[in-house]
Length: 489
Image 1 (cartoon, helix red, strand yellow):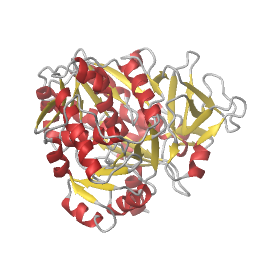
Image 2 (cartoon, rainbow, N blue to C red):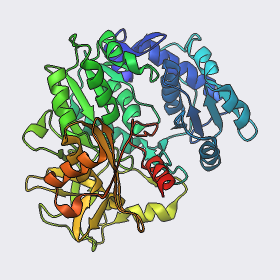
Image 3 (cartoon, rainbow, N blue to C red):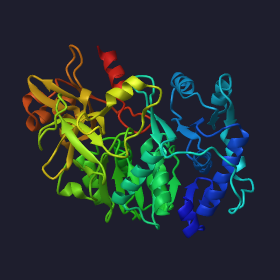
Image 4 (spheres, rainbow, N blue to C red):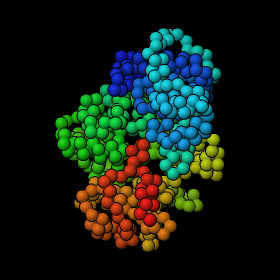
């Protein structure tokens, strides 16, 4: 951000529904918020938990925390109160900031609180002069924490990935090298900033010196209009967001400036990729695969899926990706196993969870390198391109045949009349269950799957629903699907 401010201070940096800041204005606002944080008693190493919708004030708070060495801890606004209580107890923050008065009142019993409006007011104050020395702070290290990023906690209490400055900085630069954001880009961010995919759009935009637009998450029907009105050239999406854009594009074919769609967080179906290119002429699609524990694992070249369908790309520069068997031995190309990762982008581990950290971030006995065991399954081809199969609990054997929820879902989406699909793996005495959205019947869907998949891979249960349940990050909520299924048992 400092380099962008130095080279083009009047260039647009961040925009929300209330206005826009240039890089000079964002820098000034973040300095003013840093001074405000110090006045609130926040010091280097302290955690600041933030629960608020994306806004310029939130970005000023992010950079304000980083300036003074505090740890920024964003949580999703959809997080349930019992989960937030766990986060506040686990993170032990010096300060909790929110735009929800009820949450502030409730949290004030256990932690110091401030409304986001106080941050907004601080950001609007006369900032320190550019050449004025900032307050003296303890000496900091690249190994110090910059972020705590909590998982959604869909199946258990949220756990936090501890993200040091060095790992975050390396990841941002490595991802930027592949994505190629430009100074004249406008990045349309419709993702929550508690989701690392959304948060890193802020960092990637600053590195490129371009503008990030913090889009209103409550305006589904205006999504395409908002993309066009923003002059967006880069749109990061998850499958639900991509599907929404395509639905709107069938009724509104006016051109946009979009040159690039990126995807990570959840597999983007092949037909969605194809329709995005068809509905948005000139736009490319760049598929990625990652996990919060190292930010990004692989990135495909723009439209690289045309040559390698279903691949999620190659490892970042300076990192390596291997597939190993249950014994930890690397497997040859084409053979499926667990995906492991090495490199400077590996995060420090899980906050206050040494046993989980030791199980996930292991040491290579031969080289001593840290190795992230992702719990994700897939295979590499001979050229090092990765193909993702699913999480450990989403890959299973049925009637002696190995398959995955991803394989069944991909086949189901090809069927006539099916707009979306999700699969629950077998559990106990229950068979795998296929949920579909579309204009077809369960019987027709299962019959169609029988023509596409081996018999052992076709579920015996199919349910047609109006819409699939989503998490706050826009992914399919398998926990809610499980709850739905429990109602049928």
